[in-house]
Length: 102
Image 1 (cartoon, rainbow, N blue to C red):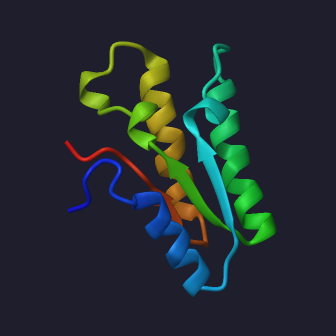
Image 2 (image 1 turned 90 degrees about the horizontal axis):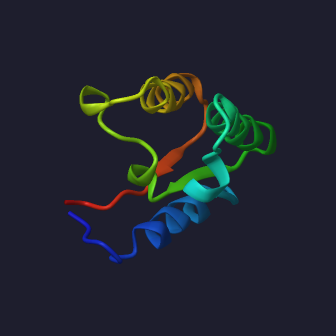
């Protein structure tokens, strides 16, 4: 198990290099929006960019914007996770979601 600040992103970059893929890295600040539905559009855009450019997609600190749906208070919390999961199921390339292990 990798601990916080344990090189998780570096390991994902290493995997990409070994597979001959360049990296497309997205952070929560690039995906989250204060406007309803925009975060989901940003998540979809990240997957489309990775597919079109044939890049290894890394979501850095994914747990900061993807929460357990069972504890969700608002619909948007559920829709962020749903958007991510549906794209993950159909995405043809490699994805790394880097999260803090608790």
